[in-house]
Image 1 (cartoon, rainbow, N blue to C red):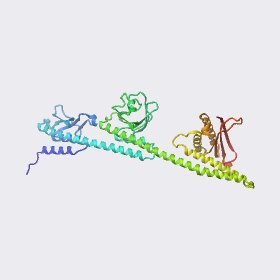
Image 2: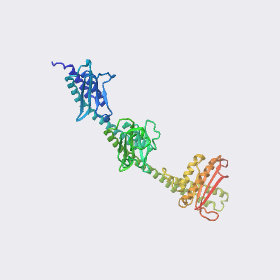
Image 3: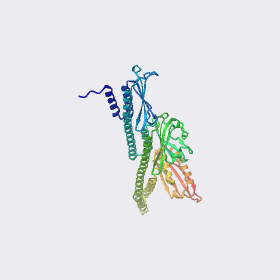
Image 4: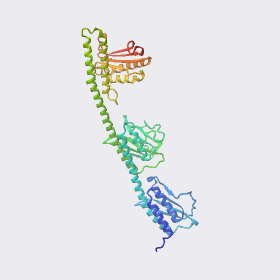
Length: 475
């Protein structure tokens, strides 16, 4: 029967087991200092990290209140190496009765330090794998969100918010190039007050701007003091990453991830993972934009089809019906119904005009400003519908887009706005008609364009006496 291991050896084995089975880096370090204090009977054990900026750790010590250690207290130091790198130093101080540390204490601590180096290396690898996994999952989530969202308004916010959380930053900011050659913040995601951030501009000539516009990442240790930073919000932040959102040679913008002043610097691994995330996010933004473009094209095609159907089927049939009624009215013996037929013909002509206006509306790109005088008139009448309580009936005669120059069109639109505003100020307006006609000769025979805006009250049944504004201008 084998002898039981000595108590100190048993404690060493237990300490090695605790250190060797932990995966969290801070947990590993805490096990190291606790095991060192227990093995040696030291009053205090500290692990001082050689490069605190690398992992945001400066010192790990035994738990509990600080115990005073006299200047003459015995000390024991032992370096901790991770592969060929010095990670830090174990420092033991104080023993009961001021007894000195022994050679056996030093040997036990050396064994613990060797195992600590192995465990720290494993914990680093585990933490690296976890970080990579989080960033990969984050990039996949952003891609999925951008490619499945119905609208594009929150695409940049989605990228900024996800990157902020992954980087443990105090803000996620996206900048776009400006027409003046600078860059401006267009999106800001932050749990703090974002006041003044959106719209902040990096002016042309800034030392950092050439790198950003060239698609190069920029890493800043302290935004508040770095002379390259020129925005008026820089004083709020400390360490920062500014990463290009670039895909296929196209620079979409820059993703900035600042931390608070005094925050821990970004590690090399965080910089690498964030740069890869920015590239993936830029590609997702391009793909999402292409998807929206295809959807918009499908909308255009559908609108064109509807417009063709209206023109080929509805307008032609209405026109043919109007011709039949006109022919009937002119037949001998049609005196009794001539007035009725005349009104029916006028109604059909009015309906044809409104259908043609609807066709023109369908042919206008829904996302862009209206093109031509027809489109601009339709935009004005549509805008006035809410104020009037009814959509104006709009008619065009002649090639108004081709014949009316821009300078005359601008004046016509001003007159139209004034007439619609006056109509909306009158009570009980139930119907408004707008007509634009060219060529519309003046009494002297000059060629021009005429605008007519007529409104009718409810007491007239939408017809009959009302207010009419007529405007004319030469071409």
